[in-house]
Length: 157
Ligand SMILES: *[C@@H]1O[C@H](CO)[C@@H](O)[C@H](O)[C@H]1NC(C)=O
Image 1 (cartoon, rainbow, N blue to C red):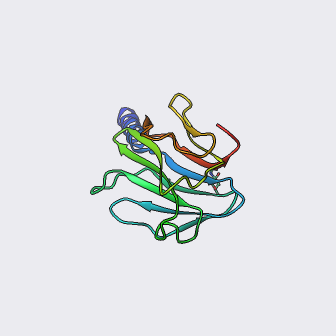
Image 2 (cartoon, protein in one colour):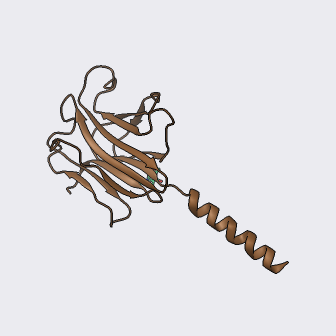
Image 3 (cartoon, protein in one colour):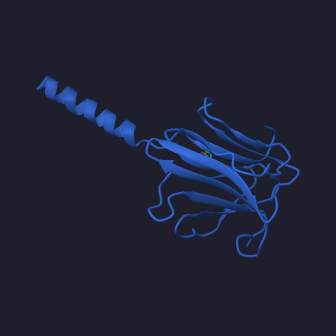
């Protein structure tokens, strides 16, 4: 009886540990709102992130697109009007998550620091001190259990 209880408890703990997954967190440290769409095989509604607040979604896998792109603009309809977009992309792959930062149509946060930093300091961060893309991919990987935050208009790297 006691053994059975212990075994059940152990299995429950293991299952919980295996499925625990962190979040992609986007924090707006700018003076004005920013706008975000979460894009996989479909496009989410627009999320407006007020100054000083954040957008959070648990890391997930999209069966068709695989990865997810969090597309961020500084203009209200930015995804649809050709505005500069900052893209925080991630791909959940079992126990790991791969992440990257890129720009299209220009650098949306030119002149301001943008930084992607995992809670787990042992994983790599991505920082653009002046908001401009160094070009090319800077893909990093981390365990999927912790949060990985993007801060726009960050204090610095
Ligand atoms: C995001 O915002 C929520 C609600 O204000 C807050 O509870 C949470 O701590 C914030 N998360 C981060 C990582 O800043």
